[in-house]
Picture 1 (cartoon, rainbow, N blue to C red):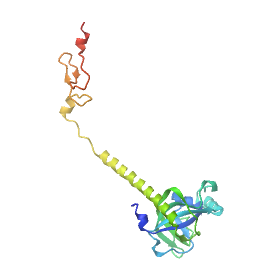
Picture 2: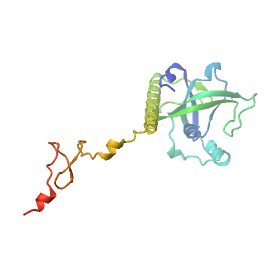
Picture 3: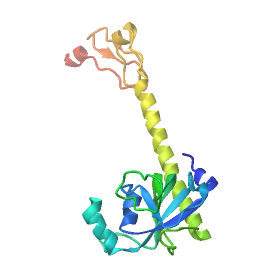
Picture 4: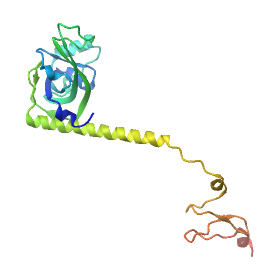
Length: 218
């Protein structure tokens, strides 16, 4: 996904009470429940998940029926945009909904490609269960955070592909000449000393060879 995708598609906002908003941010809850139907063009659009106030009733439902232990009020933020997701489909109460305990209707926005923002964007939440528009300054901050995450993701995938291509490249096997020739650390071929037969490097920059037989003589 390109970093410019969010600027081309409309960006809506939906207020989700905590701790359900944290589950949406982490991808545990795949649907946003609305009270009124959204616009027909909502499919494919991006949605900013804005955390509302902590709802003890929702926390109890998550603990009993949701199958997960909810976060406590002091562990989750409120009045801030947490993540951005893309609407994959919409469910209505007169249609057969997807099988999910997170869908309670009457309208559900099913999300995909949910991206957690690198930093929370403070925002005054809109009405729960309705789509609303972000203020201009909040919208700009959400765009910037989303672009940062997408750029880091693209760089990470580029590094993975580069490593994969490098792993597939095998260095050519050394030939007979390379196997038989001894090389110095300076990569120059070494020659055997005519006296002691020890291989030595004759390069000017390498240390001079001291013949073992001459050194042992009185």
